[in-house]
Each structure stands twice: as structure tokens, then as C-alpha cells.
Image (tube, rainbow, N blue to C red):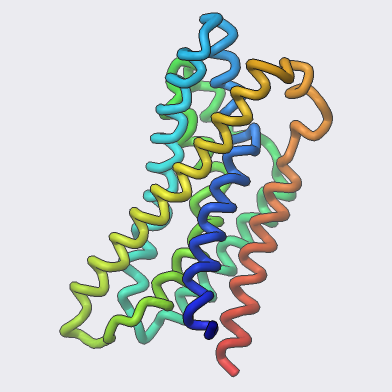
Length: 224
């Protein structure tokens, strides 16, 4: 199997794995689903809370990725855009590593506004940014002719890919988050949530830096 064959598969695997990683992270909201289930004493309330959490996450990812979908149509600047996106992810990861305070906007959102809360927290933690280097890799692996005549087709294809990446990622995220919420609600209990591993801010920030650094390294190596 050639590099051209396994690279898209590997990138799609990265989309799914990042979704699972985001879903397992309590910072993306599954403890709120547990809380909803416990307050109503019903697993249906837990499941119902997962929908706005997934929609908010999906919209946040799309908000970040769609501008890059348009930019990636500039084929002659593709490598520069990929390098710039990698540096942006690294920079945001360093910022999150230094400043771990949660955004004040979250304190103004009522607990019942789960969709809005999920949207804001995904933006604040750079959930969409983590996907940008992976998405740009998928765009560059597509065999579409460049040139002015193909620009509209390229934009359309890239927008479609962005939506598909966001949907697949969000589906993996909510599946992993829903499973975590159910296990805590049904078997593990709230003591599991309060353990030391619960705070993953440093791990999250470090993962952003690693994703950006890996994408940057691959782009620089590809120049030679």
C-alpha cells in the first residue's frame, strides 16, 4: 500500500480518535449530562442532554473549519496556509498551557443552555483548531485540478469535506462522552468524577501543541 493510499485513511482515523479524545474529556460537558440524569433520576434525561452538547460542539467546529475550507481553495498558497494553521494551533496550545482559566462567558450561561455552553467551551478550548491541520491534510490529499476554472468546484469539495469531518468528529465525540456519562451515572458514581485525573487542562493544551507541531513537521519535511 502506497503513501497516497494510507494517508487519507490515517487522517480520517485521526478525526475519529480526536473526537473520542474530546468526548472522554470532562471539559467538553459529559458531567453535565450525568447531572441532568441524576437530578431527574432518569437515564432519558442524561440522553436528552447529549443532543445539545453534540450540536454545540458541531457548530463550534464548523465555525473554525469553514473559513479554512475557503482558504484551502487557493492551491498556490496551500502549503503556506497549512504551515500558518499549524503555527496557530501551537500558539493557542501554548496560550492554554499558560492561561488555564475557564472563560468568564461560561459563568453567564445558565445550566439549562447546554447547546450554547457546549459551543462556547469548544471554541474556548480550541476543539475546532485541533482538527484544522487534519482537515487540511485531507484537502491536500484530494486529487482535484487547480486553476481558476476549478476554483468553485474546489471550494464546494472543501466545504463538503469540512462538514463531513465536523460530523464524523462530533459523532465520535458524543459517543465517547455519552458512554463516559452512562458509566458514571450507572456504575462508577460521582466520586469517580472528583478524582485527580478530572482536570485535564494541561493535557489538552499539550495535545494541541503536539498536533500543531506534528503537522508543521510534516509540511516542512514535505518541502524537501
